[in-house]
Image (cartoon, rainbow, N blue to C red; front, top):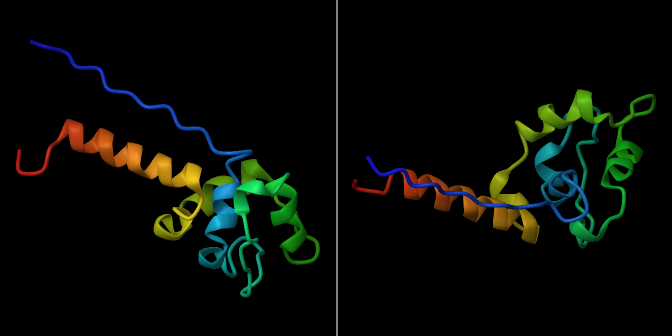
Length: 106
């Protein structure tokens, strides 16, 4: 039996939350975010995306990765997030890995 090892390395530019910023409109009304949340012009250039999210949450709420990260990751729009170059790279690598494990028609 032949074992084929397939891998990829993708790192979010600056921080994981930059991907949430890219898909901000898909997070409307989630986890204390406003229903008019708009992404910044260049989401991956925002330093401290965690703070950016926290500053836009409802009064009395803050962004806390242990509490909010998984919840937002489960609902953000993957297609919209592809506007962020590093997320687009992640998306393409996941598709490549899945395709190599189970080719279409195979």
